[in-house]
Length: 152
Length: 309
Image 1 (spheres, rainbow over the protein chains, first blue to last red):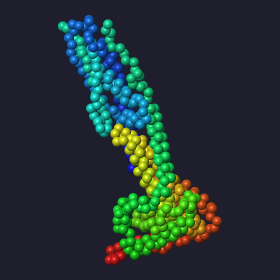
Image 2: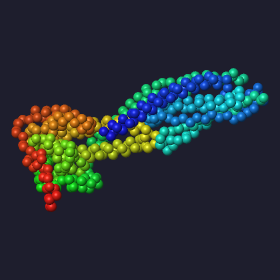
Image 3: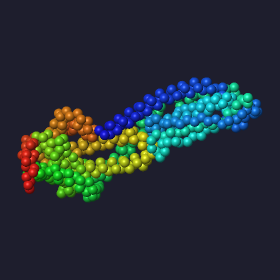
């Protein structure tokens, strides 16, 4: 009987994780696509030095920062995957969202400065919780670059 | 040249667009299959070696649990003469069955009985639910509520012979070894870390497989118990009494538990019915000894407190 209750709790958590995680993900992707369209005019490139045409622009550091957490369903799917091996697709969409959201925030910061271009885009990630294998893990994705603003 | 605007990111390259449930179903199925296979391999290994483990090893292990068990039952049994007589009657019947069981070969092989005759202990213990069980170290417990579910000595003997068969087939040791070995292997495979999340899948998988072994053991004990009964009485009449009454008692809550570790009572009754059909002679059932009849073994009111009883 105990085992049945344990299994029931597990399945309920799994179902909740799946439905809430899934709906949050599709909502997030929709919002990401809309904002990407809005901010498309702010060009973000990974080139290290400014192109000659922008040499007289002002430079400023801009950052976009996101912390994402994994849901229960993804944790279980990833743990099962860990026993067998292969691509951790459960986490791939999560990190894809995090990277794109971080760029969007970086673009927003650049837009606020009145920048036209962000050069030298870089990413950093770090684990902020879920260490020592306990609890659900969270990851920070930081996008940073140099915003080039026309001199007034 | 700088582009005019950021390009549109093509979808589905960095993150898969497939439904994660499909992948999850595959993973679950694969892991479950692996675990069930693992349990089966371990269980068959344990089943193979359990009968070869010397019984005194089992007693050494069980001695660690025994102090608590004996303390419990010592408080419960023989608080008056009626109970003492009932306990002694049960023990005599059980010992007679053990002696008869010596003539029944284990698994068709005439292997020397690995459990010494004097190693068994039999206890009648107070209990509200009709139950009987065999534990590590050759101990058999029967609750007094079970006595109300049988109407003849043969019916009670079937229950006792079933538990004796468990011990002779080394089932308590087998179940313990299987549990310990499985935990050890799971611990090695899964470790403590992230894999703790798969606990639900792993537990249900191993439980599924373990229960089938538990049911197997019950059926094996039933089959041997019937042989012991035939050796003892010359027939197996009355062997179905306990299962019939459990079958008709529609206690749903008990039923779920019973059905999970034990085989369906229909299947057990069918096994008994088949054995009854093989009886060459039919004899009258032995009446239940007076001391074990319902109500008789209970202490009369006030008798519990009498000094020296």
